[in-house]
Image: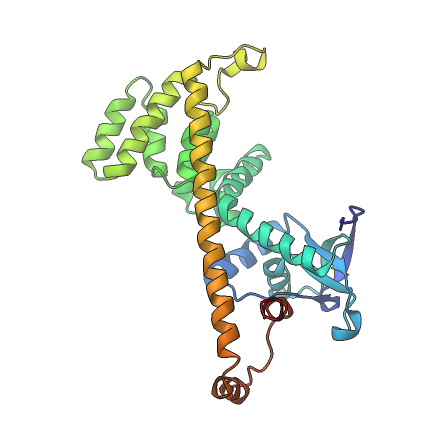
Length: 297
């Protein structure tokens, strides 16, 4: 079953959009999002698809991605929102929503750093950027310093939570005295244990391959490579280990889902449990879950 890739963008009334799988949001993150949209505007349209079950809820569109943005727009008093309209089945829409949520959780900080860089290039100073992004002035200044120095590796480490931004700035400004900056961070207890080891490896990589994330700098773009056979093997092994970890996590998740499904199926056979659900007005369940339970019987 293929998804029609034809898309278009329109301004859509929020009341015309049905949220397939609503989620409860973290209040602090929601306030941050609302404030960011109010200050900067919507950076990315929501994604919707024409409803395949319009009669059920009376709305012409189903939401694919963007529940938080819709709620933030409503909180800002807006009645319409920019939307990318695609053609997708309900199942495809739910899967796309899950994939987007996972991707956003993994890359939220990286997107934030990219947003700071865009604002800096547009001529905004650190104070204005801090106001627009909700970050502290100190953090904004630190990130701008790292951006101006081309410290991609340090920025990536900051984004991943491996080293504090203050330590990254000290390293960037230390010149040839990175080890001294590292020692000061250790003595001030900013870096200890695992983070200290990560920082040491980061400095070695930065010294060997430069500040940018691409190996070989300019020579890499001209077709030359500074990667040795050992480097390639290390990269390959790291990728293999990463995929093995993902496989283990997927197996664990699959096992848990099977356990939950079977547990629910057994509970729904108990009359007392079903009566309790009805008493608590919980006599319905999401369609996808109902299909899974039906298929397991």
